Length: 165
Image: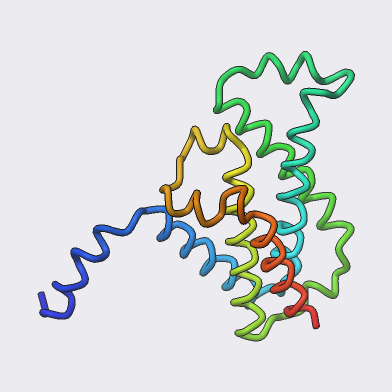
């Protein structure tokens, strides 16, 4: 192994896995934005925080509270959140204009990927059922946690606004 690569191995081994996962999400969202435009990034960035709101409101809902209370395991609660997110993504995809589907330039694609990654990290930390499935490192929890969540969401929406200039 070349010396430069050997010096990177201990450094890469000490990084938490969740930073690599967030990096992969950013790259995947950016590639999707390059290929198909920023519409899906905008839809996810709007649907995910809205799904947190709907998920938090379900236990207090008139006809659904009993059914939601029966979901005791974190896996079932996470599945409920996933269903809510998918339904909201479908609805918002139909609401957001098709003009968002136009191709993105490299900077716009990177901004859309960054926005999706930020929203995913912030939303993941808001749902205890998701944290129980995969708990991010303390650094990720500190950076994207409730203390700074609103600022990160504003950065994500600012990036999406830049994309749509």
